[in-house]
Image 1 (cartoon, rainbow, N blue to C red):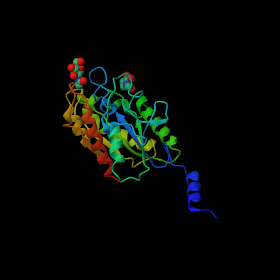
Image 2: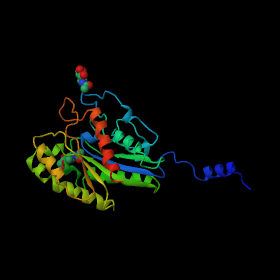
Image 3: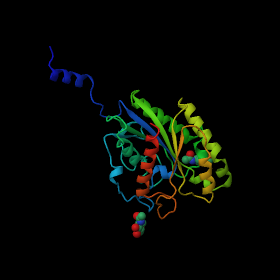
Image 4: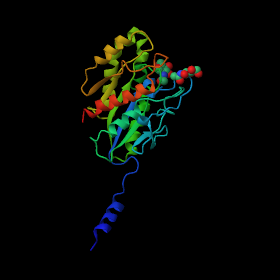
Length: 261
Ligand SMILES: *[C@@H]1O[C@H](CO)[C@@H](O)[C@H](O)[C@H]1NC(C)=O
Ligand SMILES: *[C@@H]1O[C@H](CO)[C@@H](O)[C@H](O)[C@H]1NC(C)=O
């Protein structure tokens, strides 16, 4: 006969507590341009290195490295991904913290972030077959494979469109291009209902910001949520969200995600 202590020991040996991505890893794709890549504290030529508590590393927050392995996530989250740019704080870490603090999810939940953003890219750079699109799909598939079949792709977080405010034509074509992008991603990942949360522009690289914002709101596909960044604090470059703004945006994205559960 086996005593309760021995039984517990046996159970622990048979079912080790997952230390990294294992059971219950919620995987999120982070894609778009610089404000998703993160420029908080990094608009001055160098990053100021300020990491607020809402962006601190945690054993329950992983990122898929450029070499396609899970590792503990830390700022700047897009290091090695958003190339040739000075990187700072983005919305990914505060998003993950806010999701984990919600208490809606089981306590052993791990958040796996898949950074894919690249600064200054118009949506045409993300259409099916482009380098950025294929990299995003490759990274997403690798992320799920690295979960050993226990991970779940929870959502695509999308903050992009500033580069589409330069030419009127791009602004006018934005709704159609975004809808095609979402349909392609869902088809290629065989997830027809994949949740997409798009961020309404706070700034733009050109003058057609209003047109692109309207185009974003015009996306009428099911399971596409909209979180508005307009009004959040912007750095001196008039383009990038500050670190406090990114913390706020991360929380807003988490709220939008949690409302779908
Ligand atoms: C940017 O750099 C200038 C000069 O070095 C400094 O005075 C300013 O505080 C910096 N701004 C930020 C947001 O770091
Ligand atoms: C974006 O698209 C342009 C035009 O096709 C191309 O020259 C450029 O390399 C692309 N940028 C990225 C980052 O894919």
